[in-house]
Length: 177
Image (tube, rainbow, N blue to C red; front, side, top):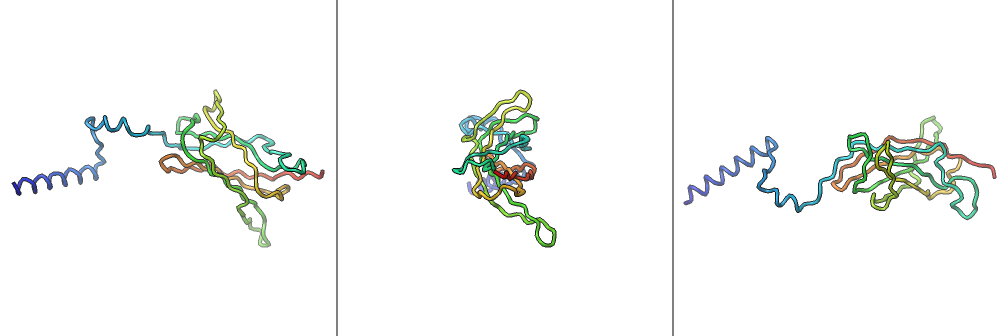
């Protein structure tokens, strides 16, 4: 009896080693347990951020001036099909102030950051671009008018996969009255 238990252990170890080395997957016998697991979501390959020519949110402060206090844009999450989809996850958006130092190099300073679950975002549907999200951000610092900023948008899906969009630089307008 002891000999057969050792043989079974060796066979099981060999099968496990082969599966690890060759990337084996479970067969149909486990399909009943797989149906009770959460639905697998597609992996986002690319983020497309679309900004209007004037993306600014204004008159959000008590002064009611024309200086921007926020920004709006659209985000499309592409799983590789060329069309955006809605999926569970979290948006993290950072805004940096860009300033030239005495050596002429650019210093980046984080001035605002936002984290929103995709379920709380306003959704949009486009025939051309697929499904996407409206992003409306109000920044913390009121002294950004007349400054140059950089927006960094990233998305983390429910499995922890993170994808970043290309950064976008803007000069924020400053109005004289």
